[in-house]
Length: 472
Image (tube, rainbow, N blue to C red):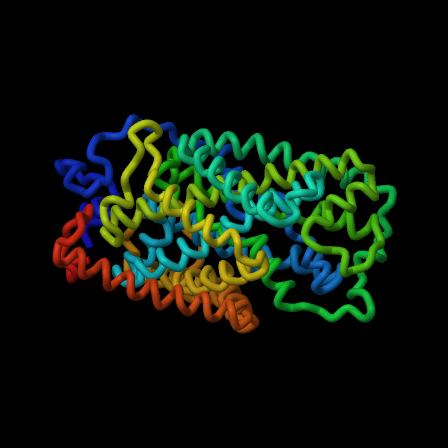
């Protein structure tokens, strides 16, 4: 494959070629938007993945203190580090919006690029739907009418619309907002952990769980997976990053360490400092623990921080979904309309609007089903992503990789096999409703590809790139 062809298919104009002929979604040149720099990118990655210790508590409820601690200690090495390494290599090799969709399309062709895009987009918008729910779950402890009924439904709708509008105003604003949200939402956990030190009894860390409480492996593994995945989501923003070849690897390294510490430090502190019924370790228990350790004032701070964290998570992941659709439009997997950018803010408004509408629809599902469905679809996408990563090393060895995982193909296969085994476990323990939802969405994704292929071949819709299918 020629370098010029690769550049053009990544949205980069080769010498002597007019960029308009590459199928850019915008009719007019953009207004030179501000690029993401290192610090905002670190916090965007942090919010793509975690956003703080909120949501880690069910791991203790499901399997006891020791296994919860071991899970958050070991899982990053099994899952987070390999996924971050893959993201660093492929995002710097293919620095365009679309991320993992580009990787699958380059490795296996447009069908798998489309399937990857569908799986990841659907898992993303399903996952986004959890964050307004988390906001309301914490707010209802302060504002009791939000516990049920129409006040709860209206608050979810309004919060989703307001947060989506903030996303519409631009990625640079979202990036620096993530920095501010991260600092404010993490501060109470740092304070709680310091106050808890004199109260810690280390023997509590070694507890295998309370007698009479049955282990819930489905909840345990899904909690770990949900709290430590989505490292590759930031790849869909690669085209918006300043000097991505240098910035991406540095940001991912700092974000991995930062995220793991943000989970482990409060978990060690709370488990060691408080003794409660294991069944009390549900979502939001950290706020109750803060009251036991320091008082009501810290509980309120953590509850406010939870809302801010959910806002950061929503903004980061909505950005990824929206820019992913733009990348798919650049690859002609989706019609040109999906890559349209706002004249005011130069943001992909169609992607933001579509993601928001689906998120609103999904936000009224049960919270556990939301997490499990997102995890299942994401697992399918990650299996394809691991395969794409290894195959691209063999298929396109000559492509410049500013960051390169220092392993040969056998080592890469081994690196991917361990997290792949975990993905299989996640899918095996899924419930029937998750199988049904994920199966229907996959069938719909396959049908969508052939519908788009028909529309492209018969020129029913306008596409950014007019390439013969065999050349693709």
